[in-house]
Length: 89
Image (cartoon, rainbow, N blue to C red):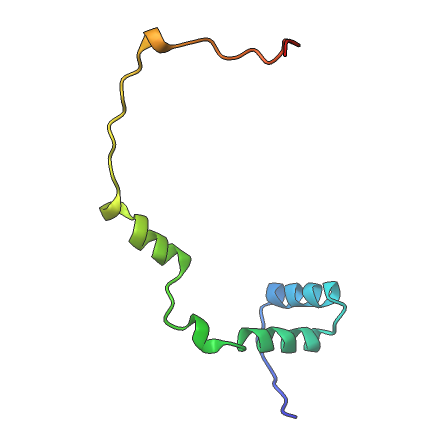
């Protein structure tokens, strides 16, 4: 089986990996193997797919917006809010 040595890992990243490994009751090396395995399980599935932000901008961006006029409020149709404090059924 091959070995992999990763140098210059950020201290905060190392601490997060160590905490994640402890939460999953695994060694640091096993957690790294699991993350590599799952991250590379379907490499072509995400390739070429736009991110959620890109997709939302494309569908709902400034060029696709609609300005709707706000209707004027008619004070004659205003009514008091319902009173939920009473016990009447």
